Image (cartoon, rainbow, N blue to C red; front, side):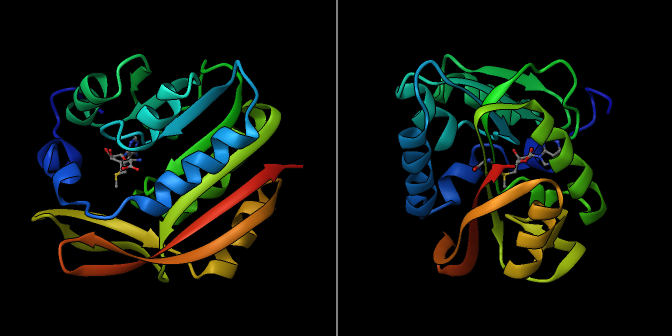
Length: 203
Ligand SMILES: C[S@@+](CC[C@H](N)C(=O)[O-])C[C@H]1O[C@@H](n2cnc3c(N)ncnc32)[C@H](O)[C@@H]1O
């Protein structure tokens, strides 16, 4: 990707945090993760975005965070809003030279990929895990692939799985599901969406 080329989230930028109304479920996932991790601990935040809420939550609790994102604008926000993380401007499918992690999280970032790219990515993530070897994913409920949408006025494409299919994709990549739950949340003012939160452990 050329560094000059603007991504959807370069255009969305700060409006993402301003529009995302309800992050309670995601913060709950972060709290659960913190309870699972010893210290020191190292977490990979795939598609970390602006660092809110997850990178900041983990950093504040003394966890080392490596965040990857293709949007330079989101990474600038992360540097400011969640200082102390190591933020890498790269495609989240690029797992080269990242080192090892106790856990990897992908909150609402895999939805931006074509479905075909998700199984090899998850298998790659599994190889980076050590210790508790945890994986957390948040998606939006649905059943589509490369589906064109307008998000905050910016055109992009998203994918979504029915819950059982997401579970299967994760398990086929070498994980066991610990929990999968659906949560209705206000993602933008007056827009309720059903989100899926999955916790898994590499086997
Ligand atoms: C919906 S936001 C989620 C951000 C953050 N994880 C959160 O919980 O708020 C999706 C993020 O994924 C990033 N992203 C989308 N496709 C990507 C890709 N192929 N490689 C790296 N980052 C990507 C976007 O730039 C954006 O920051």
